[in-house]
Image (cartoon, rainbow, N blue to C red; front, side):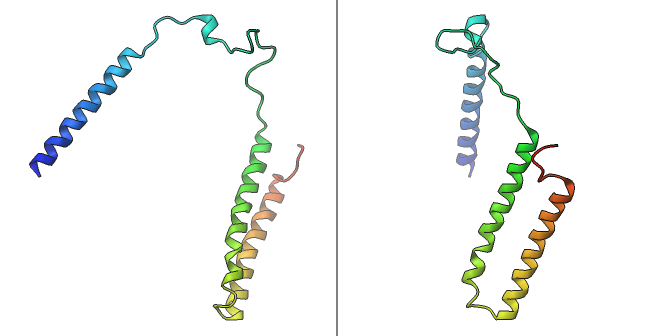
Length: 117
């Protein structure tokens, strides 16, 4: 046990020394304007490198991903149809669909499904 602790301490010391050395040696002290600017085939860029991002499109994408994952949760319901009773399967399916419908109605009421503001 003592040997193992000694080895762990040695490994931690070596890695911390290596990380400290790489941090110290990798600092650039000379910043060149040409090297830090974006490069487009030897010409100055005509537009900004970063395009404006639509937050509304991002929210629509997140909603799509959430409901896409829900589809993957619905698929096994077909497989368990033969395993459990019809009443249990129907109640579970309807409860799950009710949760999904409440979620989509909530998104609709919040105005998240409108493409324009």
